[in-house]
Image (tube, rainbow, N blue to C red; front, side, top):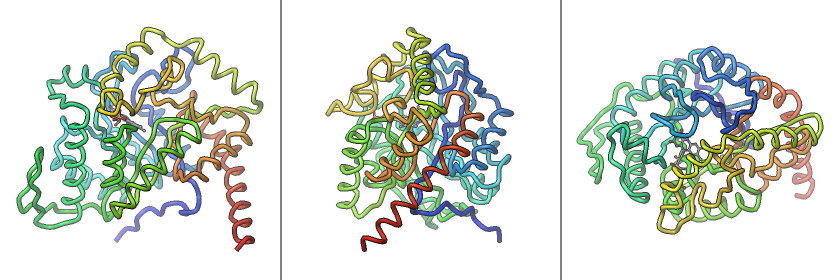
Length: 371
Ligand SMILES: Cc1cc2nc3c(=O)[nH]c(=O)nc-3n(C[C@H](O)[C@H](O)[C@H](O)COP(=O)(O)O)c2cc1C
């Protein structure tokens, strides 16, 4: 019997990084980027990340893109390749209900879980890009309906992974006495989801293990965390929270700010505007008009998931303090993107992470003293 990968201490904030499995890096800018979307670079990156304190890597799913990210490797097979090149890190594979069906996803991920000592996880993506669905001949249910389908998808995955003779009678998916063998090695692979809209939050508060938000200020994040935690509590459910951030840590604040300014100055306006147009199909199209990108400016959209807004841009000390402030409002994980991934993951592990762990230890000691 093999042992399952141990997570880092539950009292410590955790880190994930975006797998650059699509071309163009994580900013829509012509600035020089030493990040590469190929497998050799990604294997080295994953190895560097697990040496430098990252617990998770998140791969992306794209079938097409009209705004940069022109080449895209498929997420599940790419995640498996990264897992095969590492020992500890968990890889979260993105899956889109629609092209994927839950029976296939459950089986595919259970096999990968068996092959990788229980290190696969999944990000259920509800979709925001109608042009992509049109291009591949998939139906495009309206905004909230996409979440109805995703929730049934998640309930199906969990049922298949944890029960024998699983039956389910949903609007989108039906199962009858289905028994998956072998089941995953883990009790079930962790289920992540993203979004900001009411429908996205409500789904997280009912069924997801983890909820990813776009980047935002500490106050903005706190409002989302409080909202989701309250709803989840009413459902007798616990959901952990991950926040997106584009991290620019440099020896001086001026250097870090200069990098940000250069990224924005060299943004590709056509691609950023095309991305902005495509995002109108996401949360802004939801009944309450909230959601991902509903309030994003041109500068925000230069980073696909509003990562500059989280403001992890500055010296190692400044970045560490802001991360601990996010933890204080209930954030469990920071999902990081970088300009030059490998070198910056190493800088983060060497210079920033030790400061974070120090600050966390100080806070713990203060709390214990106060008791
Ligand atoms: C961290 C994170 C990762 C995501 N990864 C993907 C992805 O790989 N592919 C994709 O099409 N959408 C991805 N999304 C988009 C979401 O799944 C969802 O469709 C989008 O956030 C719309 O949310 P809304 O309902 O709040 O507008 C991601 C979102 C977040 C926050």
